[in-house]
Image (cartoon, rainbow, N blue to C red; front, top):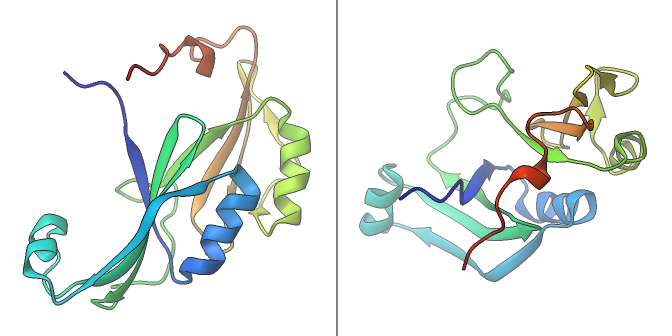
Amino acid sequence: MIRGIHHIAVHVRDFDRMVTFYREAFGFEIVGEEFSWSNDEFIDTIVDVPGSAARGAMLRAGTCYMEMFQYSAPEPASDTPLQPYDKGYTHFCVDATDIDAEYERLKGLGMTFSQPAPIDVGHVKSIYGRDPEGNLIEIQQTADNCDFPLSALPPVST
């Protein structure tokens, strides 16, 4: 039985800087201990990356986990962050109760936005921005007439 998405993963170039950013921007805190590996055939098999080496941690905010990695091997094929139209997972979305205030707060923490303000679509107000390393994050605030508010999700079962 699938119970829901457990976590998303973000790969970063500067682990310490990005943990600080996600803590200050979204309230993420490291759960458990940081981890790392290098020259570990077992982990290479799990992540399906031969010759891998990385540092990482699991973070939590509210009902969401995020796993953060900083790979030191192999070298990335590209340093260019994905665009919304690229194939693959391109962004994650956080839900806000006051998107206008969050937009200003997140700009102050180093997020960049291409639009001057969140856009009211009717059922949501939304804006896409980038963290200090260019990863795409959507900020949204659902309206009363939205079919998919966070409050409609069942409580987390233990």
